[in-house]
Length: 333
Length: 195
Image (tube, rainbow over all chains, first blue to last red; front, side):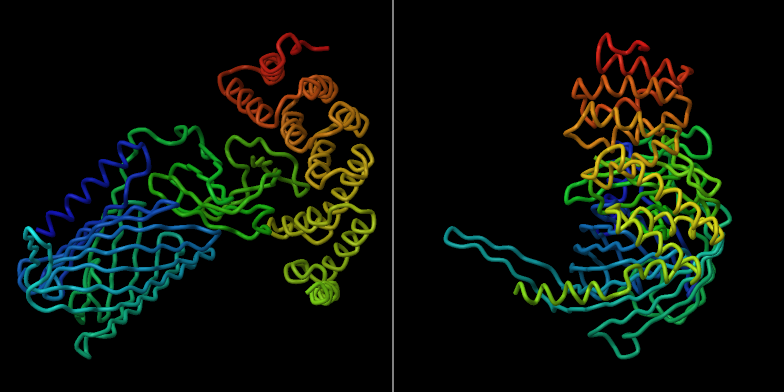
């Protein structure tokens, strides 16, 4: 039931983003052995103002472990910081179905990224009932309830096509040997869609946070399909730098969207960042974006693509920067 | 409360005025740039663009002497822009004026633009125009057409639309100068011809 629901959410997200002509969600299919074979499906959408996602993990021995989750929430980006807060729905795990809340954040600094999240879910075993009479209405549940809090602290270091990552997971109200988990991994990304990974530790497998922790060594591969949007929100590629769009958002912030075909990382350096690199978040399909607080005015800006030399954003001709190069003149209204 | 704010202000004034320079530049370059920044402050010029120019040079790997030279050139541009635009000019206007000079425009032309639009910010129009000057728009023709656009009270948004229109036309195969003239004619009908 929940698995079908998660699948429906996934398909809905794909359809909605394709219809809007925006970058599609990241869709990752993964599998491994722990020692039993398992497979997972995880999809997520990271927009400047909101997040959404769904995941499912299971295996042949579905009676032992399986889980489906959906999550959605609000998000905001301020320079290298991004935070999100929202709700989780989950089922077929921890002996019941339920939901909860989460709040998380991310900080990017060059090739380093630190993430954190805290949250709590409540599950109910048994079934819910809803009753109504002519005089009153009531709802309630049968069975037992269980609350589980979680906290995750993670980090990632990226160098070229290699990513090192680790996370520490802490849960409450579970068996003692199930309260703390960790894992470390190395991922090799030969090209943007494919990720080959080796992960070891004591942690829940797959995209789940609530399955029983396992000592595991997982050798797997994931495919993050980034389908081209049907109607790109920016002009199609015409050279290495293809598009640079700036739009005013509510709350005094400005959204900067850059499309560079084939780029893996884009850093923005500008007078409004004190010329320190500000990494743009990848939206898939060569689209990168960031939201920054900017007043109306004239600003000077360059981009660094995959750690290369400073370049003038597409559409801004630029002027002599006094250092043998050019700098783009950005006018914010 | 006001007294407390005063104490805070005094303490703030005692702090290192430009810690970003000390943190990012070598000591000799930082001290030299600080001296330039101080001279700008004394003249009533904006100091932040100068600090940013130094940080830009550091971010782009420029050696110390080149950073000092670039900051000095910018100071000269800000000073000339202030002379042309008047002592009450906003920081954005002065920075745009320095871009105008760097693109080949003259102080006399900038002064004419100020006369054509004495009560508005010129930053957007001049920044857009400076970019077009670097691409080959003759400064004298630019000045003439900008004067007309200012007298017609064309908005800043229209100047941005002008740049977009020119870029689109050039991408479509048009030459820059005819494209600019066509966009000016669209904004001020009958006024886009070369003077």
